[in-house]
Length: 368
Image 1 (tube, rainbow, N blue to C red):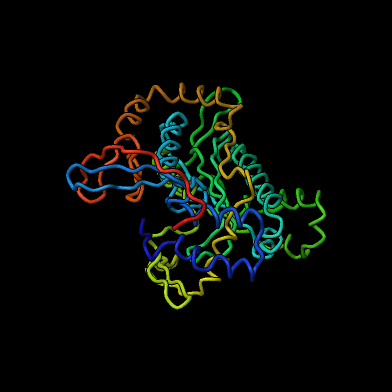
Image 2: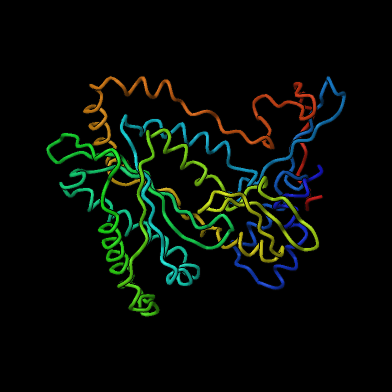
């Protein structure tokens, strides 16, 4: 099976050995490199098919199923979107983003599991607390949080995105809508977030390594309306099942350098970044999460322990007559990767005709 030149796996195959010798990566990073190197090659085995129209054999190799692989995960994104249908309410939603300050990123990189957990804990608690204020929402909101650690240039930038209901369930059992374009004041939210993170960090030995001035400066929090819940979940899905860079962004791989496209946030312009292959792999690996780390978390009405309250909120909102119609009319369209074989009915990549299974292929010891 011939691999495309502009593919993450091709870069890893050529530079993995020299990268390991120079950087001595963590065991979890070695596992990722090995998995991506072998993904959809004879090393993992697969099936051989026959195309009756082309009169030729077609080989389909197994995927690595590693959550850091740019060629895997699209089917999971479809399944996740389908599952979120049960969480949708016929209301507006907001996207609230909490960013870890620059001064904490070195500590976070060396203590990822601890700091990422604190980031989730402090940000969710801050938002839930402020939303309870009757001047704003005045009720229990629902939140889905996703950890995101990269910029478009693969730089280290840990932050959490929350999809938040535009309203909440009051203690008296009634529903309170937020303003259409305003959830909570971000300046106040930033201060609460900073204080809660500080209090959590003080419980660890890492607090002594952080400059005291950090607790006096403003922390970045952003909030914006994002329309319906379906729109919000579609926006969030790629962050869950997408790695730091996809293969289609790779545009050059020559003389030990990798060139990739990225969109500049300030202007929206498409630009290119060229770095050494060693630096490219280093940047990629710093976004590999700790083993078994949960990057998607549910809070408030959307937490598993509060799903009965979510049902209560749905019943309160049902008289508007929009809920069932909205969900039926706006089912998410499947997200397909052209490189992914369709498992139920495989077709020929050349003529798109049906394929007949001839035999399985046993895994080999190493990729071709």
